[in-house]
Image 1: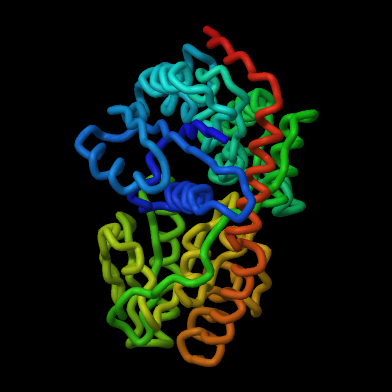
Image 2: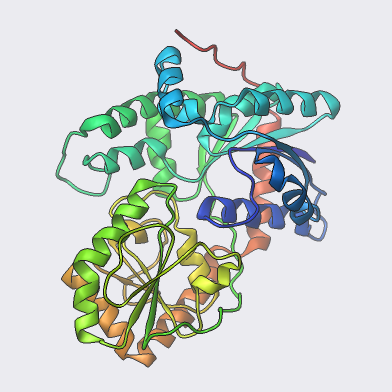
Length: 407
């Protein structure tokens, strides 16, 4: 089977959850399996020209990379284009003509069976191939923006609040556009059952299924970091709620932890927050294991989330216990007290972190159970067979015509 993989960002280096998910899936496809049909993958993704050689070399064992010297549009220009096209700003940001051109060229060169669109923003470029498209939605974009606007993400509360501000307007536009993209896909894969239900509700009649993300159950932890204990928090700057969650944690929850555990240190990776007592700031590490140190504890203080937090799966694989807010834990199919601790921001989350910091037995028990959940739910081999079956099903559907831009 030949798969043309179209993405809004290259999988390498895996410095955020979206890239890591791509990388693990490409490894899954390259691994092969007894009695299974071989898979050839070609990737089309934007990346700065200076990085092309390094990315292509890193991905060479997994796929052939067609890298395009392009990057998402600046927000002001994207806002103008979005208004002209009557589409969401986030869609306009990633609608890159050079990428669509490379997709069409690659598809003309070789007969691909199916196109894999990684994230809904990749759909306009993927449709340029003129082949059936399988869309993998790492999350439900409109729900993320609705939650970030102050509205309620479907299914998380019985209290309904209308979204407001520019994020709320973006959420409304995204819901309509996201529904159209799901309908243009031969098959849409969500990474959780909850996300699959939400996407199916947006686009009635479209084929939507859930497929857990693949992830290894055993990875080495990084070298120890200072602190007794050392807490880590990954706050990538690419999505504002990540930064906002980190800043709220440092301002309101962390002082409670530090008061109970004066020797503790919070190692914050990413550009978030000002200097604070007991907080050590780090740039995004070249080696991801550095953010998961031996003896460390991961905290994930998100107020808004969708899909699955790859940072939690990585912590589990590296034997690192996790404490997370309810939004961050949603979609993991895990139980608080069994595989991780789930607690609301403020005093409840502080109490959970103090309990982890003081109880070695609790940390070890959570880490063991989390690895077992990884083995049961995210084991690569059975997920590979299911993904190949989804590709085969999508390949049998007539390709969609790319939607015409309006305005």
